Length: 88
Image (cartoon, rainbow, N blue to C red; front, top):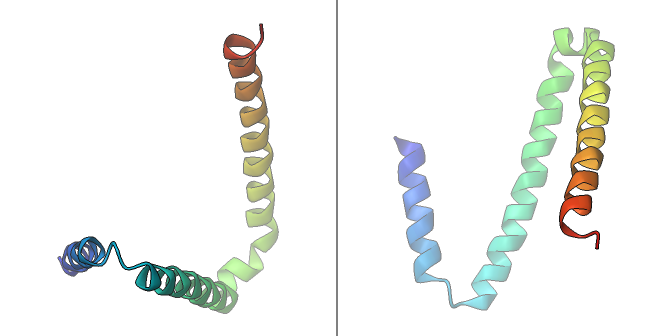
């Protein structure tokens, strides 16, 4: 429930402050900083988890397979979209 309240409050504040460009720049900068802080804490959490560290080679292998599959799928789909819509 708190999540929805914070989301609603943020939407309301964003609506009320939408024309203040200096506020928008400050919000954009603070969001970037907060994302970096969250990534730092995520890295600390992963580094402290012994089970993850022990299986990092398995996790890395799965991540590699998913990455290659995603790239290959994107290339194949792009090829068909190009042939259908852009090739004269």
